[in-house]
Structure formats: C-alpha cells, structure tokens
Image (cartoon, rainbow, N blue to C red):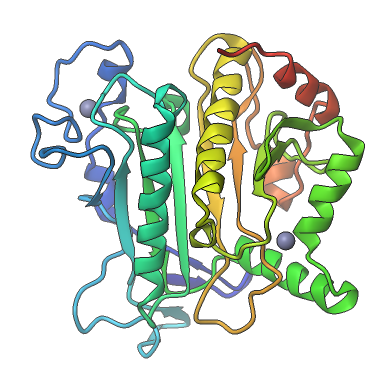
Length: 326
Ligand SMILES: [Zn+2]
Ligand SMILES: [Zn+2]
C-alpha cells in the first residue's frame, strides 16, 4: 500500500489483478462457452451448499503469516508504503448461474445474510484489522468479470476514508445531540415520505435527500445496530431478506433489464474505540439516470469530489414506488 501524503489516504497497488479472467460477456448472453469457476461443476463452486464463501483467487490484499500492516512502515525514498495486508473473499449467493439477487428465495437470502454476519464476525476477531467491507458489484458496466451471482468481502487494516468521515460525523452528532445521526435521518425521511421506496416492521429503504446517484437507495434496520451481526431476531432477518429482494426487484423492473449497481454494506469499524453512533446500513449505487443514459463520474466529480445529481430524488423515488413487482 502506498500513502498519498496530499489526501492522507492509502492506495492499494495490486498489479496481480490485471491477469484475472474476464468472463462477463459470454455469460451475459447466457451461453456457457467457459466453465464458470463458481458453478457447481467447478472446484470453487463444488459441494452441496445454498450460499458459500471462497478466498478470492486474485486478491488485492493478502494475509500471510508474519505479515503486519501495523508495525512496518517503510520509507520509499520520499514516500511511505506498508505491506498490503488484508483479506479478500468471494461470497457465492446461489449455485444457479442464471439467477440474480432479486430472483432468490427468501430462504436463500436469509442464508446469505447469515453468511455475511458470520464473515463479518470472523474478521472482527483479528486485532490486525479495523474494517470489513462487504459489497456486490453487478453488471458489465460496473466491470464485473464473472456474472455468476456473487459478492465480495475485503478486510482492511485501516478505516477507509469514507467510513472514517462518516464515523466522525456520527460521533460528533451523538455527542452534541445524545442521539444517532442515522436514526434522525430515518425519522426525517419517514416524516417526509416522498423518498421512501419500501418499508416493513424492521427495515426502511429510501433515496436519501442528499443522494449522489439518481437511483441511490439506502436500506436501514430500524433498530440501532453498529454491525450487521446485531440483526439477530429471526423476524428481522426475514424482513431484511424481504426488503432486499423487493428493492432489487424494483430496480430491475425500472427499465426492464437487470440493473447494474454497486451494493455497499456500511458496518462500523472495529478495534478503534467508540463506534456507538454508527448505524449499520446498505447503500446501492446504480449508474443509470434513464433507460439509455448512464451517469459517469467526470470533471467536477473526479476533480473535486463534488457530485452533481442531475435528477430529483423524490421524483425518482416515486418512479421506483410505482414499479410493480410480484
Ligand atoms: Zn456460474
Ligand atoms: Zn441509529
């Protein structure tokens, strides 16, 4: 990992990743001309399972014995670098190559939620790490190389900048108001109502007031939990599976094609002191702004980190609410 002294951020340099296979295209057309590594007839997908995790064969970060991010800060001429310690896992959602998250049964999605919880809990036991990032990249446009329904998990030895900034805000809000910033946002969104997509007893989903992407959806457990593992009640797990399925189905129904997106789980960091103000949730970023229109991050976004949303979040939420699903 190389340190950017200007933005004070770590950059992962992972040259090995350029050799990973690109299988997306042939599978999008549903013609099996390759052996998919995650299908039951391949070694990684073998066995009798509903959901399964495997180590990423092309990891950006590695966890070898004796390797430590903490203690070795190496000076490289003027610059600083550290060993690229971390874990990269692949989470297989189903054995069925042709399905997507929205097609899975509630029972299957519940099993996936439990696997996410288990891997989160496992990572948190290691004192060398501070953050576990669970996510799904979906669609060729996002750069997905294998179309078998799967997500990933990265375990970092540091708190990533976006999460760190959110934690600072959450802590500050908690200190000043004696309440959770995210819980406040949930109650404000409920009161307004115009941006809500789907809601049930335990979860709520909405396009936030400050959405950066036209169809950016946040899914929150109503109960304040710092980590996905905090959702233990079996009814809450079922309601989690239900809202996840509904939200994805609505996105897929919006333009009549499987909506590409990045689904990002925001758990609190660990091994870093007080994180009580942090409220676990999911954020989904689809890159589309219209049926044939993709929003790209360009000059203002990439040059200044200031995002321009060319649409109105309430109108987009209404469109999603109106998408009929089974
Ligand atoms: Zn497959
Ligand atoms: Zn909260």
